[in-house]
Length: 367
Image (tube, rainbow, N blue to C red; front, side, top):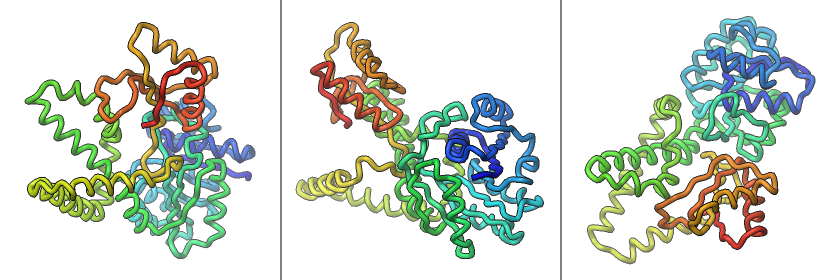
């Protein structure tokens, strides 16, 4: 498809979308803008975009598609700015924000000018950030949620999907309200819980110095999402506050229930509590990409002797399997293996598991 695509915000998400569009629509022109001029320079140098715009006004005026890939509050301000510009009447404006209700409401200013705005949320990410981390496969098989209002013609939504076909994502269409509830349950709320566990542990660590050392294994893994951007999560929480307050009320009731089981020393009920949790979690899809980006970790049970790490990485190098991280863990309760090797994709992890089994007798697990 021919046309001019303007990407506002050249971080991981914006940069990856630009790459997907360039690959699928080779006759299109990708213009980029970032408030950080260094990001825009890098995007041009790396071939993520064709041209860097000096301002939002410069890039937006002749665009056929505008993608706003910015924090939620900035997205609302950019929408207001766009509504004051003489845009191409056929342009489609979309965003990548993690909350939708307030963003879609702010787009009334575009609707009044006859401009199509379709809320979007690609549910993928990485522990890395910036345009240098952008990659074409970031959204592959991930859910990509669209939240068009009732007045949006289906042909406009289908055109947006064609533009984004190169993401190879699974497109779903829901209401802005339903989006914020669903992502509140499976993404926003777990981030609050992870951060609260870390905060409580930090306070206790001031009295017991062994806590940080013992928390270096499984604890660090299960609270991984607490390392997400504080600025981003401040905006997400404030823009989804009503739903999150309700979920926190339910969580307090849940924790009071657990406390009561302990007060009563109810052995059978405690067993059932963990049994039901285990059964539900075990039924969750393993290969699906969900709301929280997956971490493709492989646990390898190796003996402790000099050179064992280079031995394992040597096997992977033979098969040209790239790794993103490798570390030794000391606290391994409920975790099988001493080495944790991280990969970019599930396919790489599966290949690594097969590779290690071929070249050695070391046992592996995905946890």
